[in-house]
Image (cartoon, rainbow, N blue to C red; front, side):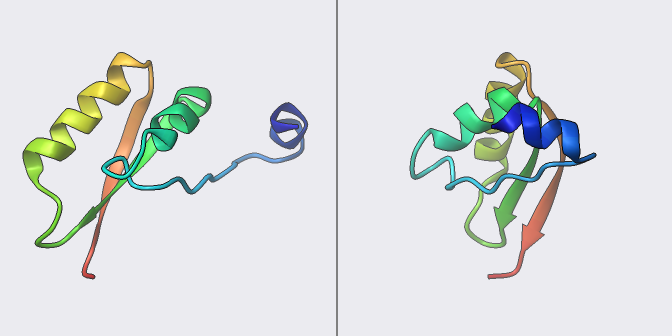
Length: 71
């Protein structure tokens, strides 16, 4: 199914649960090859974001950037 969608569209965006809640996002990202991290102001820590980015890199996933949410 994903291959068919990929052939029909230039860009596919998948939303996955927070990595602090479960590892589903890591599995999704591993199949996509590119990820955007979402950080929440006054909640997400820089060390945790760096750890997540490193873990994604270890899976061969490139981090395109990070979005900072206000709430």
